[in-house]
Amino acid sequence: MSADSNKAAASSVQVVNFGCRVNLVEAEALRQSALAQGRNNLVIINSCAVTTEAVRQIRQTIRRLKREDPQSEIVVTGCAAQIDPQSFAAMPEVARVLGNAEKLRPDAFARGRNSRVTVGDILSLKESDLPSVEGIEDHSRAFLAIQTGCDHRCSFCIIPFGRGPSRSMPLPQLLDAVARCMAKGFREVVLTGVDLTAYGKDLPQARSLGYAVKQILASAPELARLRLSSIDCIEADEDLLDAMANERRLMPHLHLSLQSGDDLILKRMKRRHSRADAVEFCAALRRVRPDIVFGADLIAGFPTESEAMFENTLALVEDCGLTHLHVFPFSPRPGTPAARMPQLASGVARERAKRLRMAGEKALRRHLNAQIGKTLPLLSERGGIARAADFTRVRIADITAGQMIESEIIGHDGEMLLVS
Image (cartoon, rainbow, N blue to C red; front, side, top):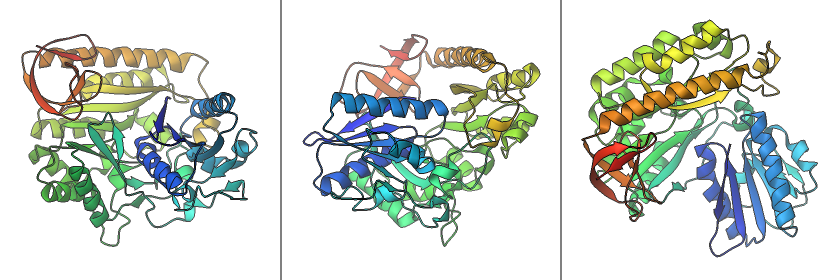
């Protein structure tokens, strides 16, 4: 888990962001809110609770930042703060703790607040509290958080208790946000959420993610690229599949929340799809969009996972044709059912994760080899990097970020494509 710092150029309000893309979007809203209150020398920790290791790194970062600047005021918010506020309030380095809903209030960072802990019952929330701002990565793409919360209860996951029930940004607000991105010159917009494929189900006129995608593309003909972040394959709707097949501006890349390739482990995880569902989903999309590339989240060493069960997950890399893997060795998260299940021997999860990553590296090299000789449209980022439509990284000359270019692929270095 890494921390990204979002610093205001002309102020001393700093947001240190951990975790998901939703946090990335919220970070800009938090910074703007603090600046509007005239704050300075303020550090906002936007925390993540997805693993015990993430929480450990957050505490370590808080202590380091206070050592580096003893006069700074540190406010901790985000999922870890929502789930366990008192543990952060007990840290002498922390001035205040805010819940995930409270942090987005206009006066959240006003001076003179007496309450050290302001954390409400997020599970009771019904309406969207998503900020109408975009997170920015590499000055080339804008991230829009259009959904937050989760109505599912996967046995390894604590996040529903940090984010609350699924809540969606109303479609008119979403289309306005896309229009602002276009006005600012962004060539690519990425839609993100905690459970993105749940988008719209809670709105008065029940909508779907696919419907929203089609409306965005129709309302913003100048948008070059629309991309989706992680989705749940079992929740993908017909409009989304149709858009992926027929809308060329919807990028041919999907990151799937698969977690395992074994049916019994999927049941113990309380996932909603089977192995066959995942394989067929990938095959069906590849039939209608042959250039599509899949990434996936996979957990190695889940409690009770046998070697044969793990081999089923390992085989999923080939059976689904996965290219970009995010591999996580299982670590028990206190407060989840999986933490109470029989755990594997120490080191097994790490060893299996290593094997999964090796399979991912092999799959990526195969994909990179297949691109040699093609001329691809690319979106430039900072530092001499660009992205192909399928999210593959490409090493290019160091040009201004956010430019659409075309280049011939002449090779690769095992991780990135190389151009002439």
